[in-house]
Length: 133
Image (cartoon, rainbow, N blue to C red; front, side, top):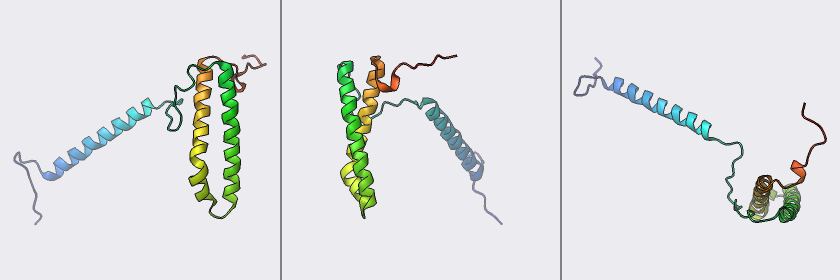
């Protein structure tokens, strides 16, 4: 004979557990749906770069900084590729180059966003020679 546990109102414990599980499932589903609605395709979250750093730069200064950080990113990518070919290269990448590489890529994102905000003529947003039909 199986013993059933009931609370003061006479409701079996199994029913209470199922109701609690259903509530948690609904809550989790709601949170996932809300998180999906709040995600942005153009996230401005950065760890290594200050989003407002280039606010007062002119378009010429932004272009100069973009050139500098593009060169730095390419240099770091080359160093990382060379390090990966040697023994222990992954460790060298993480210890020596990865943080600098992420800094360079984030600086470029901030610069691109600032250039778009200021309507600067930069290579990614130069006018096209084809018409929209």
